[in-house]
Image (cartoon, rainbow, N blue to C red; front, side):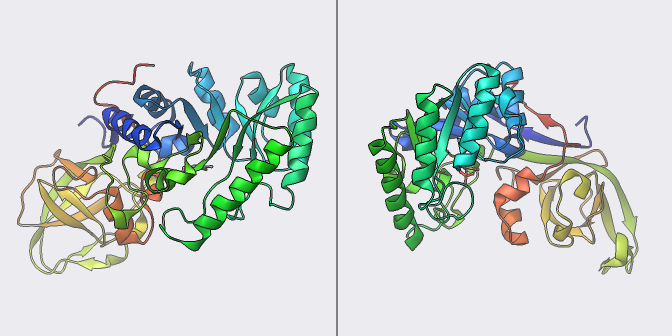
Length: 376
Ligand SMILES: *Cc1c(COP(=O)(O)O)cnc(C)c1O
């Protein structure tokens, strides 16, 4: 391998995962969520692969991400699914980027940006149906609908969507799910009575896309599943294929005596004479320091645990009497085909979710697309 550490992204897996989700969406459109650099897999490449796989829409969290997609020539509809106050709305409107709105105040600001941009802003009204995060509470929803209706009548905005987001879709049967479905139904009915009949109503994330047919409406918004990671680990993989393999070089191998303290703080001490391997990846690359003496990696076809503390640029494994060579490849996580851990396995060991494992892979790590870049 030419890079000391690289994240290999299998875009065929992304395409296949999107095709599977599209199937499960049963006629609803798919908005592929590619925020946070495509959950660490690369913004533009995964967006293109998702479109190849049958997604019609893309979703991001920041206007800057949407503008990068436009600059790369992506013409599909793109929604900035998170509303913040200080975004460059005029640029977004000029680039034909869809914006999420959850308050009458934001409707007014975006309408003003649309006037400056000289074209109507495309917006999705977001209802807070129970997550208590973004979006208008049920109490404020009528005022947002009224403001949006008025701005649409004056030609400054076009209401393209009505949306919400689940709190507990990854816990099938959780009592909040039925409540959120009912609240969304009410929010949609209210908007329709007020004369808003937008193109798309949407609230399903990956977990809901896979388990809640009644949440599909006109469009689903899967994120994690596109990258092949399960949104509900207790229910298995749903046939999804993990797209990312994190690989690093075995930079050095050396024999050390029993009683050798390993890495900062000497939190690991060799029990006997052994071979240590130095792996060229650290927390500067996104390997969690909490994984010190905990996470396993695949070296020379065998699992070995990280020995002692993860450093910024490297960590050590205790190879015992295994004798791989310096320059060999170490698999940190991947689909598991060769016996390497999966991102889900790392997440379980660390008490976090797979989302965080892949999204935290650092900007220093090159994303490599072995099958070549996506075609559109
Ligand atoms: C991130 C995000 C999603 C995707 O969630 P997953 O659990 O990754 O499928 C869907 N909708 C919104 C608004 C999001 O921010």
